[in-house]
Picture 1 (cartoon, rainbow, N blue to C red):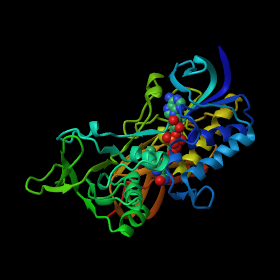
Picture 2 (cartoon, protein in one colour):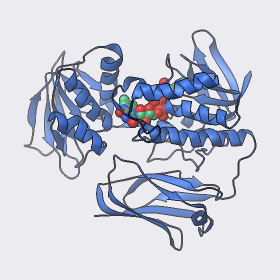
Picture 3 (spheres, rainbow, N blue to C red):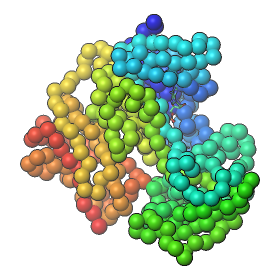
Picture 4 (cartoon, rainbow, N blue to C red):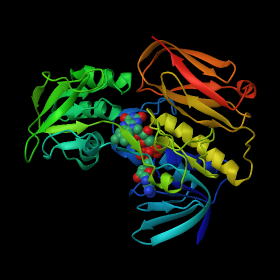
Length: 416
Ligand SMILES: Cc1cc2nc3c(=O)[nH]c(=O)nc-3n(C[C@H](O)[C@H](O)[C@H](O)COP(=O)(O)OP(=O)(O)OC[C@H]3O[C@@H](n4cnc5c(N)ncnc54)[C@H](O)[C@@H]3O)c2cc1C
């Protein structure tokens, strides 16, 4: 069986940045395994701009952002295998992948970084009544058809879900000559970035119907229309509010699911809220020497934060391989009032400052962020506004970590 110091599963932005980071810390015996025919992950189909503002202080398209990392991989000579799908990873870090040339191959790794990204929630998960005509796509599938294959998916469009991909596709379809009738969002707020609502909907006069959902699909062979209904505060359709909208295409942008089948197979502890692994500040999972970063860990709003997180995982994996990792603590971090999740969920060292990422459950103004241990408030911060669609973070300095009483801190948010 082959052996490697470090194997990285997934060659998207997370996998590539993690590899560059581990290489920078001296790891040379490493390999990226990617199932697609090229590196870059989902960014290859995101041809709009807006990437890299934090990381490169420039506005790049998705492929440009991905290329920055791909070029680093090529320049450094970091090995990667394309068209190779990882099908299993055992608890003792034996990775099994398959490809056309080699068949089934097993590699034993000292450390593994999981960077498999996420997939879109499909119609099956929504249970919308009606027929099963052609013309219903996830927004990401439509994005791939249009941006990578040059195929137009429809002319009269309704979009269900106001996540960023749905908003971006509303603009993309309009630019390609389609008429986008509405973006329907079941929640009373959009789950997309504020800048995308302005640039993708407002600038093109596309209506955003908050508190609305699609309740029926019409059409036999091809979609002919959808019924849109208002929903009540429990997200149940309100009888009598149904409106028929003619359309030939329905795009679904109703959430992303981290691809954690391999993670589950290894028996790694998962977080019910993020649907990713439970990790410490180094992005190390409950299985020693196995790290996780990017959208497979939690769905990020910006790829810049994915890269930042992958650097942390890459450096930590390098320290683990070299036997330099410090674990002198075990504080669990929990999400409390108005907070849907926190990452990391554990802090295992007080030697370095730690950024805790979180999302709020609702849109809030005049926000106070409060971190408490079993006795006191240990950290406070303020924000003018928070939105569930936008990731937030607080940075806990070493002196704060050193003074924590007990072995748990909770993060809550108070706002109006
Ligand atoms: C449709 C879509 C549109 C988006 N648009 C934007 C946007 O406009 N702006 C923005 O900032 N962010 C956007 N994002 C989010 C952004 O693309 C992600 O933050 C970023 O791509 C996540 O990087 P990643 O490496 O974690 O995952 P990915 O980019 O998904 O990469 C994961 C990689 O792992 C590979 N992989 C998975 N499983 C295996 C396996 N078993 N074996 C081998 N390889 C495997 C996949 O093929 C893929 O290449 C979008 C995401 C999606 C899904």
